[in-house]
Image (cartoon, rainbow over all chains, first blue to last red; front, top):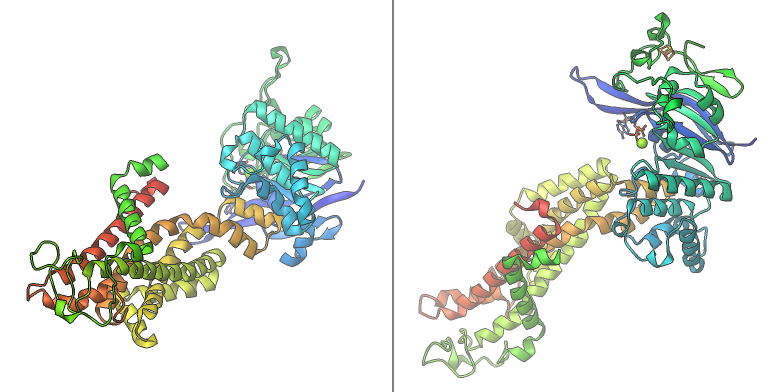
Length: 319
Length: 282
Ligand SMILES: Nc1ncnc2c1ncn2[C@@H]1O[C@H](COP(=O)(O)OP(=O)(O)OP(=O)(O)O)[C@@H](O)[C@H]1O
Ligand code: SF4
Ligand SMILES: [Mg+2]
C-alpha cells in the first residue's frame, strides 16, 4: 500500500507569555507524534478538546511550522519547503475547518469562495471555473442558485457543505477534515459524515478525520489514532480498536459512547478529573493521574508506542 | 440596520443637510442667483445688506461682500470648493492610511514598528500646525492645502485601519486562504481590505468634517484657496474686519455654512458608527 502522508517525531510547542517566575512557558500541543496515512485511507484522530488534534492537522498542511520532526507528503519531505515550493503542493492538500462560521469570508459570495482555490492554483481555466463551481456545489448538495449568496444566509450544515466544496475545488488527494461536524446538530452531523464518506469513496480521497468522540469516527474511519495531551496513545484498525481497546484511555472513550440497548451496556468507565494542562504535563505516562489501572512505574517512565499485534500499537506500561 | 439608522433622528438630520449641501455643490450654477466671481467687481454695491434691510439690493438675498459680490452665490459655489477639497483630502488620507495600516498590521514585525513610530511622531503635533508647516514647504493654494491636510490625516487613518487589520488577520478565513496557498497580495486585496474597511467609512465621514474645517482654516490664513475662489474660510478672512463697521453678513454666513456642514457630517458619522457597530456606542 502506498503511503500518502507520514509524520515522524512531529512536535509543536507554542511559546506563551511568561509565568509568575518570569520564565517563558511552552504549551506542548503536539509532542513527538509519528504516524502515517495510506493512500485512499481514512485515519480518524480522536481525543479530548485541547489534546492537539487541530495543531497536528495544521502541521501536516504546513499552516503551522513544526518545532521538530518531519512531514512527508507523497514520499517527499515537505518539512522545510518554503512558501513558493509549498504552493505547488497545496493544491493537493486541503482543509475543512472545525468552525463553519469562521472559515468563510463574510464578504465573499460562496461561488467566489469555492472558486478561490482554482483561481489561486489556476487548475481550471477562467471560463470553466463557473461550470466547475456548479458541478461541485451539486456534488455536495447545494443548489446552484445559492452561488451568489453570502455566508450569513446559510445554516451551519450548509456552510459546512460550502467548506467541503471549497476543499474539493482543486481535486486534492488529501484532506484534513477538522471536527467538521462537532458544531452541528446530531442529525446534520450524520448527513455531513455520510457526504464526506461518499465523496471519499467516489474521489478516492485520503482523509485525516479529526473528532473528539469515537462515535463520530466509527463509521468513516479505516484506522483510528487516539491522542492524549499531545501524544498518540493508541493506533489500530478501526475494528481492532473498537473490539479490543488496549489503552485505558481508549477504553474510557469507548465506554462514553452511548449504547442503544441497555442490556448491552457494559460497566461504564468514567473518566475522573480534567485534562491536565499541556504546559506542565504529568510525568511518566501523561494519563496516569486519571488512569484506573495505574502502576508503580507509570509516573516515572514515559511509555513508548509499541506494536502489540500487527497494525495495533499502544503506549502503556500494561503491555 | 436601515431602520436603526432612520430611527436615529440626529443622523437623519445630518444626512438631510448633507444631501442639500451636495445638491447645491452639484447644481451651484442653477441655484445661485448671481455669479460668484463677477468681473469687474461692482464696487458701488460694496457691503450692501440682504433681504432684512431696506438698503438691500434686489437679487442679493444675503447681501454683498466688500467687492460687491453676492454672498449667497459665493456660499453656494463655496460648497463645491469645500466639499471637494474635504473629499480629496480625506481620499488622500484614506489611500495613504490604508497602505500604511494594512502593510503594518498585516506583516507586523519591524515594518510595523517603523510605520507606527512615524505615525506617533506625526501625532505629536496638532493637525493644523502640521498642515501649515507642510503648506509652507510645498507652497500655497487650494490644491496644496488639500494635499497637506490629506497627509496630516494619514496617521489617524493608518491607525484605524491597522487595528482593524490586526483583528481581521486572526480570522479563520484568512488562515484558510493561507492553507489554500493564496499570495499575501491576494489575501490583502480580496479578504483583508474588504473586511477592514467598515470603520474607515465611519471615520472618513467624521474626518471629512474636520478636513473641511481645516481647509477653511488654511483658507482663512491665506494659505489655502486664493482669491477670487469662493472658499468659505477665505471669505470669512476677507470679511471679518467689516463686522465692527456693522457689515456682519459677509462674514457670518460663510461661518454658518462651515458650521452647518461640519455639524451635519459629525451627526451623520456618529449615526453611521452607531448603526454599523452598536458596540462602539458611547
Ligand atoms: N496559536 C496558539 N498559541 C498558543 N497555544 C495554542 C495555539 N493553538 C493551540 N494552542 C494550544 O495547544 C493545545 C492544542 O490545541 P488544539 O487546537 O490542537 O487542540 P484540539 O485537539 O484541536 O482541541 P479541540 O477539540 O478543542 O479543537 C491547546 O492547549 C491550545 O490551547
Ligand atoms: S501507562 Fe500506566 S498510567 Fe498510563 S495508561 Fe498505562 S497503566 Fe495507565
Ligand atoms: Mg481543534
